[in-house]
Length: 443
Image (tube, rainbow, N blue to C red; front, side):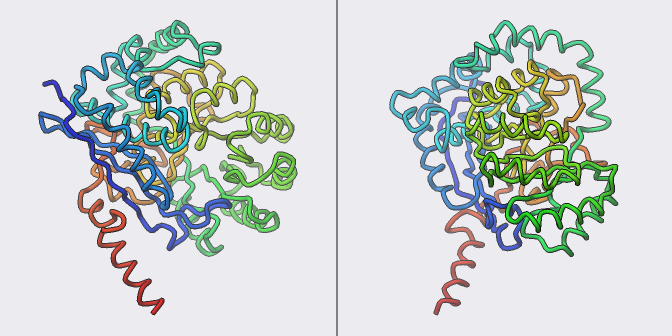
């Protein structure tokens, strides 16, 4: 079958997570986990599903960007696209007029991710494999052909990428079997959102410990004394043997970050995540250098625009943990480039998940990274947030605080149609009810 793409539809889907402070941090105090949800319709009836993650307001802008990119896909067959996937990626990001809106960053790049996530989902479904398995079974040359090496060849050439992938083939089957048995290590962010009460923190930590969690992330950055109190509470709850990370979500200037984290060093955090502007490469380098004597690394990447910025962060030794994101970068294609660069620099990859659907898609990339690139689990783990999985047809499976490899064909992007209809903005039943309630309050 040709799997010719006949149409691209996109819907604005929002979940009111702000009502219970899920996802709250020092910079994003009232997030409504949302998605620009894309469906590719083909001539044979097979569909591809994809999305990009947002926080509510502005999702309509991403929807408009997806609609602007759609004509570049309509009429093409899946085979046309994937036979030169790197070339198609460049085509999608190099439209002579639309690239001015980026290039390869911001809303237009998030829309690119949504569209390409749907293409990868369609490809995996057509092959009858989960996305991670599609990648694992690919020949290294085919993997390399999916990557646009423009702007990163001073750090990673096609020949180097191929050599890294070929070298990692040794032991690949054993690592795949290991993942199928044991799963990929995860850490939880669900226990310590900034808006949670102390009672919530204690109860969630107790429940998580009982369920086998040993790695915990704490949101910080709004108030130093409160951070000290909350970090002490969490550390006392989880004990000295378990791992703690802290996350400021870009709250500080460089010098402020160094001072603030110094005051939290007694709680032995493994890393400080997003300590300053995600665009400040030299600032991250300065923070990394200052915190190294304290044994605290810097993690960043969830709002890193593209592979070029990751290249520079790695060149500048500005981060000790790479946090890729399946909806901020240009889908799997660009994430493959970053995985390979991180491996060359020997910096562990610990993806960002957080928002709606990110756990579902990022599990595929970490499995590929371990099985076919890094062959190493040292200091590697993937974030897990226990929210909204019930809205997906193939939700993540966590066992013993590990991601178990998904078995269903595709990229795990498909939402339940009932959930989409209920939460589509602004006409979904949930949003209509919320609007009516607000209207009554203001009368």
